[in-house]
Length: 345
Image (cartoon, one colour):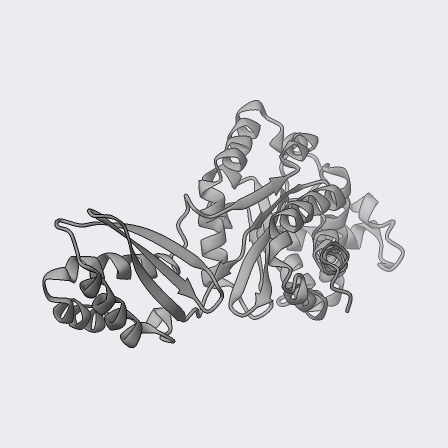
């Protein structure tokens, strides 16, 4: 660990692991029982004093016991992430194809994680990135309405009803279909810019409003909207097992967060925007973007299905969560999912 010598590192790890097990402040006598330290209680007290001054542990009461600070957890987690990086990378192979079983698989994933860790778990339905337009079809619904069907190369379909100010004949509908497909077929959705939109609307003439509505539907295929994002959760009541989270007001707020899911969607968006190459993010205490989770830690991981599909898995627990077990559970998830979707490697 950076800034700490080997002995301080071992003592900090021992304090964190002991506190995660007991939830009680840790004293030097308890730490001296760790067989690989081989130092006296007096030496440990001096080292703990240094760790306190450095901000890695804090003394919550006048007793000699210490608990990890957010800074201490952060250092512990950063090293753990380095150690586990190779194992974590396997999460990218979680689920391959079998999208018709997706809902069932993701619900099972959340349940398995909550059960294996004794914390709360969340899994977002995968979103698409890098999509290209496969085709666009304008069809008549009735004299006053058209329906625009937009299909991406991932066979994601979005339908959009278009209200007409006046009836449109079949030849005009055909011309608009040709205009849209000639210019947009095979084009990455992200490459549709304001200049292209203006040019298409100009070519559509008096029917520019129809083209604008179709392009809105195209843009909607890559927008991650909090209200539309599907997130499966499990194990929310596990929160009550931890005294620091079981306070009636705190627990009620956390449960509401899990039920309403809007803030969870915000967390998913933040993770996807800031994730590193391993696809793992760890939020501790005040690092959490969700106000109701300031007393929690959250570990989030990216899973990928190939062809631009990716989603987020998250485990939520107390700051003294067993980070190593959480990471191992994420690794084991690949095997669980292989069995669920029948994709034996």
